[in-house]
Image (cartoon, rainbow, N blue to C red; front, side, top):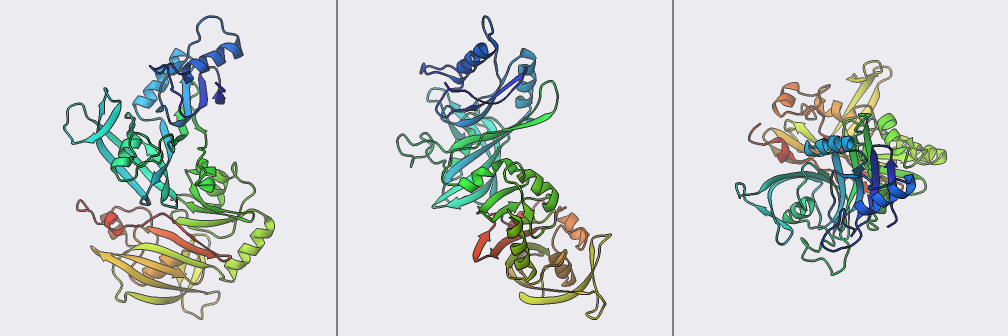
Amino acid sequence: MDIQVLYEDNHLLVVKKPPNVPVQADASGDEDLLTACKAYIKEKYQKPGEVYLGLVHRLDRPVGGVLVFARTSKAAARLTEQFSAHRAQKRYAAVVEGSAPGEGRLFDWLLKNEGTNTTSVVKEGTSGAKAARLSFRTLARTKGLSLLDVDLQTGRPHQIRVQLSHAGFPIRGDQRYNPAAKVGEQIRLWAYALTIAHPTLKEEMTFYALPPFEEFPTAVKYLPAFRACSAVYEDGDMLVVDKGPGTEVETDLVSELAPLCSPLYPVHRLDANTVGLVVLAKTEAAEAELSEAFARHETGKTYEAILAGVPEKREGTLVHYGLKDEEKSFMRLVPKDTPGALRMELSYRILETKAGLSKAEIRLLTGRTHQIRVQMAALGCPVLGDDKYGDREANRHFRQKRQQLLAKRLTLAGKTFTSIRELNINDYCKEDL
């Protein structure tokens, strides 16, 4: 077996598991990864006798991706404890059938049938059933398929495969849990990232192995930047990404993307806690051209927001003038004739209202600092979760600490890009609130 080593030291051996290879010896008699890795260490380091290699977690036989072995018993004990306590973070990429929602959380009770080596979803209280939790975010969709980034919070047999199938989005090529899978088709499930604390250094380490999913080449390439964004589009001039919350464009975002694509030049900005589409240029010439397009308002920028309150008019255009306090990073509304005043214009349309909240579509006609947040607050319906310009009492009531603002669509250079992220007004109107 050709062992692809991702990292090794005196305590760890991290490898890329090939698909359709058992992690350890089983009844099939096929060559297994554990035995092959022991042989690799024995030969490389000329070890006499039996080589120790601790198995601390597993992947299903048909699944490929990152797998860590312990090279000492002390490392094995410490890593096993991390996995048992769910401190090790396992992320999977999955291609599923259908148009999956932007994000979701699944909680089920699973029961394994040892005789058939299958797992099923059962009712709570079923003897032997175990709780299973995972969350996912959809990164891309094409031709009736969706690419999911799955964060596994428990480690049950066949958990991702069973839960996604039960939710109506079976994994493509899954011979056990997808009735539409073709005979011989390869399952599209891959363990692309594993984060652990080094057993002796105590440092957090993340290892990556990218899946061979030809349906989503751009999204797959940028999977290692999962903490900051997902990729939407790439060509020779620009990279369009879907930014997550709490990410500063010019620092966090660029640094996360730098190992995957460099250089990169931001050509516009989003507030750190605003999520959605961001454009980065890949050359200085492209930066100048794209920046000019934004400056001349030759782009179309559409946002979605959850507002605290319901506007009197269901749609309209707002025009205000503001002065920015650079020191406090605050935009203050002023009369039109105030020296240095900046004109701000946007149009809005209310899509839905519920429980004193509104979901709005907002088209930005000028691009000023905090413009949407300032203007919607001036209308009397601030962005929910906005602590700077918003309604703090409403934010506390609805338990929102981050402005619920999404850069949903962007038209640039004749192309239109759409964020898969969604703002669902029902998420803020639960009974326990």
